[in-house]
Every structure is written in structure tokens, then in C-alpha cells.
Image (tube, rainbow, N blue to C red):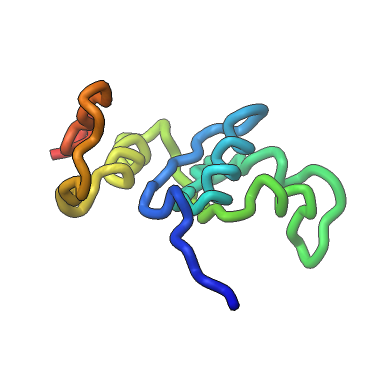
Length: 118
């Protein structure tokens, strides 16, 4: 008998703008726990790990590890449109739902709208 449970980070959106060391593996782990991870890459210089090691069917096998559980978009962050897109990806389409339980008083209340959102 199997039961389907909701991953602990379901509903959380993470933008992965990192290219080396701790950032990509951290984003991958967040995706493993159910977060929606959006990997942002430069349109002309993709993540270097895509070119490491052998490839199969045109996809680097090394990329399959840090790229799992991620959707990828390309943005040129040197342009105004490219810089505004990450903010729009982090802004909720509607206000976040009201909490269903009262958190301990020691917890700081999160902002209702992320900084930079309207």
C-alpha cells in the first residue's frame, strides 16, 4: 500500500542564478524536496557543467546530476528586461494564503509580498 505525500518544499519557488560550487547543488537539493527550481543561464554562455564529461544524445551526462528537478530559462542580466524578469518570477500572482496555524511568537512574520513586488 502506498500513500502519496506532499513534498515538504512544495509551493516554494527557487531561482538558481549560481554557476559554481555550493549554489547549484543547494538548488538541486531544494528541488529534491519539492521546490520549483528555475535555473537561469546566460543565452550565449550556458552553465559550464553542461560541457563537462561525456555526452549522450547531445546532453552532457554530468549536467544530468546538478540539472535534475530544474526548469531552465535563459536571460541576459546585462539588459533591463533581463534584470526585471527574476523579480517577476519571484512575485506571487496573488497574496500568499493565510496561515492555518498560529506560529510561535518567536517566529518573525514573513512579509506578505516579497521586496520589489507591487
